[in-house]
Image 1 (cartoon, rainbow, N blue to C red):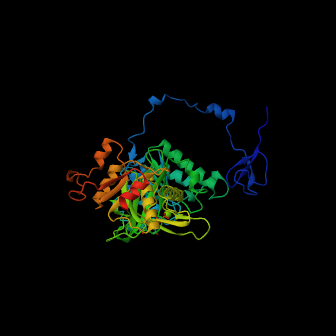
Image 2: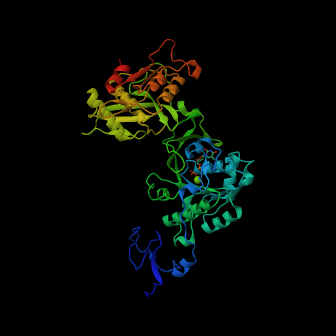
Image 3: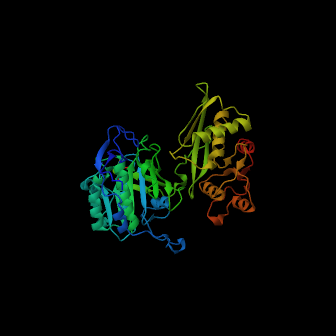
Length: 478
Ligand code: TYD
Ligand code: MG
């Protein structure tokens, strides 16, 4: 029988194992990190014999998990989670330092609708600091059931978890976790992955859920939390595109899901950060709307965009200036630049309006990042208006997807968008042709019964349907 090797060479940075010594780890590319390590009880035949053999089972006999959600007590967080956090699941909350991850976790710990205990583990702040923050957030009555542990040591955390048996575990942050088992250098990627995996394994087997925070820096997305994404069930990113002022001039922050095994990733949670921590924004439909008196400046239009199940009315601003270089450039960080280029190309081709010799600047008031395809037509109208200097008529909302052939395509939730716009005092709505009889019923002006104000007495044509780009421009810039 072949004799088992007593030593292997293990990378102290990433944990990769090699049978022989190498100067550079082939896994992580670090130099001089491979160290001789004794082989620790790896699956010998004897051990394997003592192990119970796993059995498969018919899918139909498995109990569904549905119904075992815990409401976080914070409506906007529940919205992005898909109605609360599932038991046995792990949620990663990523974001830049200072965005409010620790605040969100502490507020969730206080508001969560559970009778069980909550363990708040912090490797970043002292117990005193957490208490100060809790006092500031006004967490008093719920403080009884929150246990605080200030440590990043996995073995310590596991001991406490076994003693406290929490229903919710909050870990702030994944980057501060370390374990002696996971390599010699604390704070490496391997440490973070190993510890996170251990905690996830615990919640999978118990009636509990795990929240983890992780710092993201603008360029560190790949090496940090990204490497945890495949392990957790839900990934939420907290972002603030710039210091956009919300109602009352407060900071606006957005919580978006990029992965969710138990819900959609379309929803965006909208918060403002104030004196008493994060506050969910009740009615965001008008949050990104700029109220203007009289005529609009050229290049400014209002789009009705769908964000998950909500409609937001947002101001889109376009500016075109003769290109400084030989090629035209697009400056747009709220709407994908590729989308802007595509819409600009459609305008050039189908309206014969030259944009390829212009630099294009696109902005969305309020700092919201827009991914909805329904913004295409509004973008086209803004670019047209910016280039020609003809202002878009006031109190007009626009939505519609553009095809490369210049057609205006129909959209999901058209009726909801029209309703939201009319509700906010818009008088005209430019959008796609109603596709079916049901759609055309939906687009007729809502009656008073529906609670939405009539657009204008006697005005039937407040909906401007457009078949293609040309007819859309004709309809509003006539
Ligand atoms: P924090 O949750 O510590 O951010 P993170 O954990 O993501 O690094 O919150 C950071 C910011 O929020 C900090 O700049 C202070 C501010 N803040 C308030 O404005 N109001 C509050 O009530 C709290 C607790 C924090
Ligand atoms: Mg923090």
